[in-house]
Image (cartoon, rainbow, N blue to C red; front, side):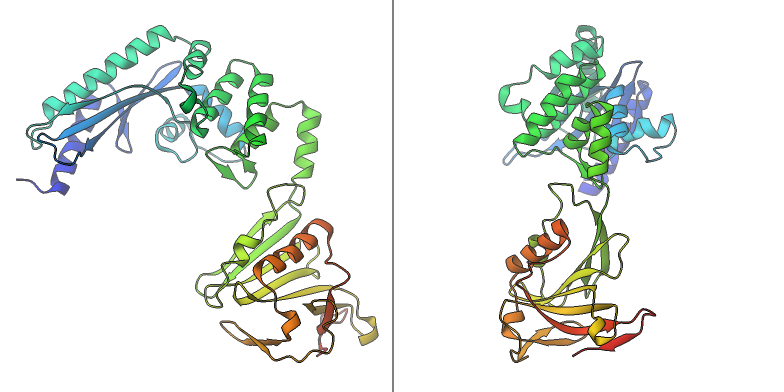
Length: 380
């Protein structure tokens, strides 16, 4: 009896051969067929059921208009080079950023002898071709496809992947107002779609793409990157992302600060783009053992042009530096009033991010200064 690994390889090869024999292409374990309007995808997998007497395989048929992925890519990742027609076709089948096809058929076949997949594979592909032909005959264009997409049961229609398909189909038939309204409604409910990237969430970007040119220009100005956020880990180094202060979803710092443990994630640095001499940074040995520092212009009384301060609560000046913050390469000694938890530190980051400063009531203990030529001056 073949091993499970050998059976999987046998079935994969048989499915691939049968797909090709019927004129289907094959990529990533799926067979597919493209015509002038649609991409149809065949998938099959072993369907294990506890206590089953006879093994079964399950097949599925999904269909989507080719244009849907083009609309998605134009809004979501316009600057990406997705290659030529063949590569783009493959990306529609197994790419990370692709629209899920509408399920138009599925079923099971029994496999009395798993080592003989031929009959079962042929039966599954017969059913796939039947389901595909019937759907295309009843829905020959994108307009009729949209009606099918909008006919899903209510409990399924609101699934993010189904909403995405509906929004894109509305755009494809030219109803950008309805598409934008549907995307806006999802966003109002706190749903941003099944994918997101540096430019925003998919529902957000599709909503913007449906708006007039002046609204789009205003949006892109609002979300222009304004800050760099760097997370420092003792085990995996530094990781930097850009943020835009005009984005409502950016600026949620508490999640990162709560991960501090003094070994892995232990520092967070927020720097305005174009102003390297100003930043807010936090370092911590735990989510309730965090020290916060700010660097900003000033310090002429000490003969410097900018100063790094340790931030403390109001009235903390002169407190003993008797609280250790253990970090991978050093131990920082601060006062009890200079130790923050993740929520308190996040509030300071949010203030700095939104307004460019922290509350004036915070105590600032000078630690280090820089002269105009970049010379460091110890101010402790």
